[in-house]
Image (cartoon, rainbow, N blue to C red; front, top):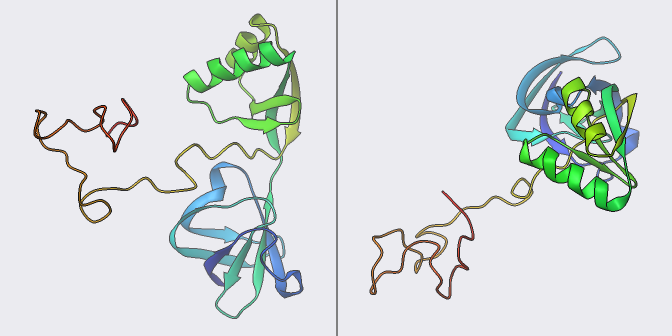
Length: 181
């Protein structure tokens, strides 16, 4: 089988499901990969661009059938703490650029004894678990950040000066330090 289209969860007809794949977090961000389905078939995922596959998504095959994406449970740590402490722990995790899943009353990260000790040292309570890991995609993952002459003819990257403000300068187009390149 060959899958050529990613279908987000809730936007495909489950009656068209022909099989499923069970993938951990690392396996769920792909453009092209050969997988084995739960039914024992080979599935070539061949998407036009890399996609972040999530639990319940579908992969449309050339014959019209859909293979469901299932998130494989993996070793994770659920970190619980009072709100202010949990926020502080979240800051430290983000400062380390770690993928984090936000739960209603906890933070979920991949199992890591060093990070577990850090979270405990900051006042958190760490619980080992085996569960699907679906971290936040990041601020720029949902909407690509692209600009330039094709997107904004008034947007320049020329030298700074009174006639040509520097990129990111305090002018009408950008707040100070809005983003980096």
